[in-house]
Amino acid sequence: MKVLVWQWGRRGAGPRFAAQLSAAFDQVPGVSAVLSLSTGAELLAAPGAPLCGLPVRTYANIAGLAGRMLASPVLVAGLARRFRAMGLDGAVCAMPGPLDLLCVAALHRAGVAATVIVHDAEAHPGDGFPLLMMLQRQLVRRADAVVTLSSHVAEQLRGRQLIGARAKLIVADHPPFDFGPVPPAFGHGDGVRLLSFGRLLPYKGLDLLVEALKLLGPRPGLRVRVVGQGPESEALRALRAQPGVTVENRWVAESEIALLLGWADAVVLPYREASQSGVAAAALAAGRMVICTRVGGLEGQLRDEPLARLCDPDAGSLAAAIGEFVETPVRVAAAAVDPARAWRGLAERLVGEAMAGARHDGFRQPGS
Image (cartoon, helix red, strand yellow):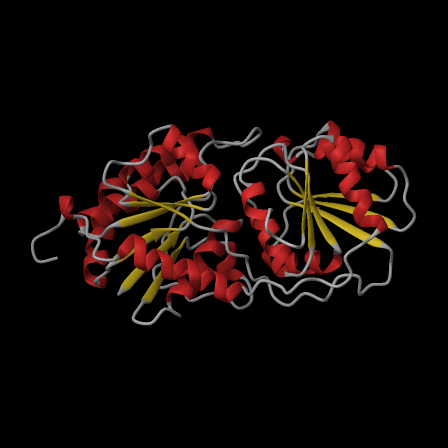
């Protein structure tokens, strides 16, 4: 079985997700994967870049996106020819993006079934890509199988009746990204370190973190580091004013994430809403405690994890959870999750449940 795994974003978690899923397919007996990334993907310029069997020129700005859409008939026809020549048995969209409807159209023209992994059913407050959600809804309706990484997102898709009548719906877990080796927590001998990492948007609950730290009061040896990219806000200004807190509003390169996790003793996720969390999965795999609010898909993702402490999405409950960790830190981590095993498990599920015998006959070409 030959499987295409594509994700045509340039930065962030999408290309990483595709690369690790593609590598996992290669570990399944009888399966080989072809990875397709944007020629401008940050991951391809990083040390140890994955082998990209189908690089695709995408766009660098809105004008470039518009140009690719205008050229869609040529792009779809060209991709369909390449897909037929590759002899694909299935394809997986690792994370939806603006050009994926064109890829699915080309796959269907080549008679190849398309599986789409949906990370979010709707835009979070502060997300700047409302058009993407409209395109994603169309993509989900055209998919032959849909995979969500939490039951929360699956229920949202069902409630909006976005799953096609013939499409399979699979609920899986978010495997942890493997960012490289991370030293044990508390190896620094320097008090307690908490990391809040990710996009600095309103739904991340940074205002809750401010109020929780105020309730907690100054704690000797407690250091909090807030790292990510987003618009400047009152919450960020308030965090900078708290003792022991540093805020780094910047893009974080792939090569730096292991260093961030290695700096921390625990990761705090004060979200007001969430579908699931790749940061939480990576933190657990690194043997880090995760202090997290009980919202959206996070409770289902973390409730059975020995290294997770869930709290209500209010300042008092969050302050209590942080205070408990500071006073009685978990210095001996539970066994870390094996990222390779988790990714292979996802690949095996997709082969067995989404792709077994799947063909898209509606656009099948003679002789394909």
